[in-house]
Length: 323
Length: 288
Image (cartoon, rainbow over the protein chains, first blue to last red):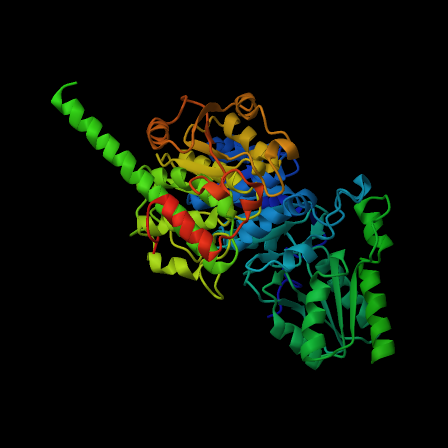
C-alpha cells in the first residue's frame, strides 16, 4: 500500500514527535486506569509534566536511577498496570541494559520503554548523550519489540498499538523535528514495512528521521532516471523479511538509512536477511564506528551524510558499481 | 496458665516444630537437588530455608497454588536467585508443582533453571539471577498495589553481599519516598558471599543503620528462629508509613555442620557421602 505522499498532512511543516507521544499517552491514561508513567527526574524532556498534573496517582518519579526505573516498571506490570517508562534513550538503554534484558525481555513484562530524544538529538551535549548504539543493543534481545516511528502520525499510532500489545516494547521517540510522511488514515501494523513510494531500480529502507530524507532522495533520483522504492521499516523487530526479500528480488540494490550506528541496527538486520537468503548489493547509511564530534543534530546528520543528498549519492554509487 | 492458654502454647510449639521440620526438608531437598545437578548454591539454600518455610509453609503469604496468577496475591520475589533450589523446594512443598519435578533441577530442558524463570515455573514471581534486581521490581509491585487500591503485600528476599549492587539503594530511596509500608525487604544476613566473608570483601555493617538512614523501619532477628520469624512476619509493617526491613541473622550452610560458615560452601556441592551425613543431621532419611 502506498500512503502518505499525497495526503494533505504530508506537507513540509516540522513536528516534534514527543508531542504526539505525550498527547496519546494522556489520552490512553484517561481511558484506561492501567496506564501509568515512570520517569527519571527529566519531566520536561520526557514531556510528562502534564501527565503528572492530570494523573498524580499513576505517576512515579524514581529520581535519577535508571536501573531502578526499569525494575520498577517490571514490578508495576506484575501488579497489572501498563507502565510507560520514559527517559532519555541514552541512559534508558545503556544504564539499564541488564534490567531491560532480565526484568523486561526475559520476564516478558508488559512494560513500554519510551526512549526519548534518541540518535544525535542532543547533538552539542556530546557522545555521552547521543543514543546511536541503542538499536543494535535492543535488537538482539529476545522477546523485545523494537519500534522506530517516522513521524507524529506514526508515533501516535504506535503508542495506541503498544497498549493493545502484551509484552515488552522499545519505542524510539524522536526529538529532532520531522515532517509528516503518513496520512491521518495511517494504520500501524507490527512487523510490516510501509511502502511509501513505488520504484523498480533501487529500494531505500529507512526508519525514524531518515524516512522523510529517503522520500526526498527518491524524488531527486527521478532526475537521474532512477526509480527508487521507499520502505518505512518502523518495526526493527520483528523484522519484515518478506518486504526486504521482495526488494532484493525486484530491485537492483538496497540502501538503508538510520539515525544510529551503521553497525548492528536496521542496516545490520537487513544485511542478515539478504546475505543469507538473497545476496543483493547493499549500502548501510548510519554513523560510522566513531563517537560524533561537537555540533547540533542537524550539523551532525549532515556531517555523517544522513540526509536526502547522502542517500541519493549512496544510491547512485550503488547502482554505478553494482548495477 | 489456664487450660486454654496451655493448649494454645502447646499448639504453637507443635507449629514451630512442624515448620522447623519443613525447613529442614527444604534443606535436604536443596542439597539433594544440588547433588543430582552437580551444581548449585548450597550455603545460601540452607541459610534461607527457615525464612522460606515460614513464609510459604506457615501460611503467611496470601497465595494460591491453584491460581498462581491470582491478581490479589501477595508477591514474593527471590532476589538472591541463586537460592533457587531452596525456593523451588518451598514452592513444590506449597503445592505449586509436584515435588517429583525437583529431581530435574538443571537437567537439559528442565523447567528448573539454576535461577528461577516465572514463565516456566508456577509460583515464581520474577526472573532473577543477576543480583540487585529484586528490590526495584518489588518496589514496582508495591506501587501497583497502591495505584490499584489493593491490599496485597510484597516481600523480597535478598542476600547480604547482593546489597553491594547499587540498584538496591536506588530502589530503597524510591520505597522510602513513596512510604511503601506494604513492602518488606528480608535480608538473608549470612555474612558470606561467593569469595569470602562480606566484611572482608566490602564492609556491610552497620547494615541496619544504613537501611534506617534510607527511611526503612528495621528489625534484626534470628533468621533460624521459627517463632521470631513467625512473630515478625505476622506483625507487618514494622512501622506504619515506612517500608520494612527485616535483617535475618543467619548462618550460611545452617543445619549441616560441615557446611556451616564456610565460604567454600557458597556454591559447594555435596558428595553422596556428604548428602547422607546431612540427612542424618537434618533428621530424615531422604527428602524425596
